[in-house]
Image 1 (cartoon, helix red, strand yellow):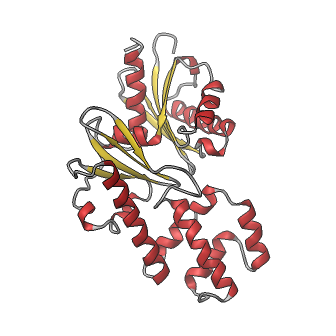
Image 2: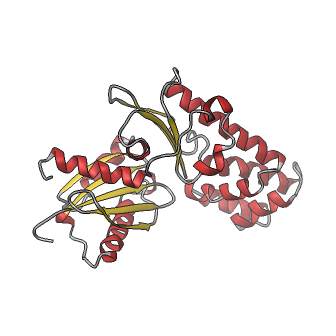
Image 3: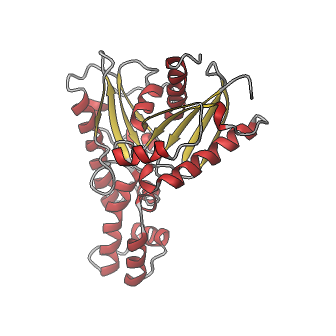
Length: 294
C-alpha cells in the first residue's frame, strides 16, 4: 500500500451505493455495494455508506482500506445542491485525491465511453445529461424529490400512493394493485397509512415502483408507465433537439421502462457501454492524470 495508489469509483444514489476498485492503471480489481449515499439523505450517512463499500471492495482483494492511498471519483445524487456538495467535501477523509460530479456525469462517462451522447438515468431519482460534440455537459431534470425526478422510482411510487389512498377511501377499486401497495407500506387502515406517509422519504416511495411494474397491465399502472415514457422522451428532446446523438437509458429502471418510451425516441436508444460506477472509476483515473499521479 505504501508504494502505490488505488482508483475508486463510487456511484451513490438514494437506494444504494456501488463501489468499483481499480489499480493505478484503472484495471478493475473488485466491486462492492452498500447503503444509500445520495446527499439528500445526509452527508454523514453518505460517507458512512461510501466507507462501508470501499472497505468491502478492499477486503475482496485481501487488503485493508487506507484512504491516503485512494483516488476517489464520486458520481453522487444531490451534488447540484452547492451546500450539500461543500459539506460533503468538508467531511471527506484524508484521501489522496477526490473528484466529485453528479451521477448524471459519471453515467455519461460510462454509457458512451467519454464520447458524445445522451443519457437518462432512472433509479430512485432521475436525471438526464448530454455530452455534446464540444465536450460540454448539460443537464435536464434531476430537480429532486418530490417536485421533479420524472419517471424515477420515487416518482412512480408517489403517484401510486395516490391510488392506494383512493382505494382505501372507496374512491377507487380495492383491487390487487391497491392491496399490494398497502401491504408494502404496512398500512391496513387510514391511520397506519398516514403514519407511513409522515415518515416516508424518497427511498420509501421508490420501493413501491416494483409493485407498479408487477401490475403493469392494471389501467392505472398503464397510464402511469406511459406518462413515464413520455417524460423520458421529453428529457431526450430537451438535450438533443436535433436528434443527432445516441441515447442510453441507465439505472435500475432502464430495462423496465424502455418499452414505454415513444417510438420516435426509442429508435435512438443504444445499450450503455458501461454503468455509472465504471464511469466514476474513469473519473477517478482522469483526476489522477490531472494531478500527474498516473
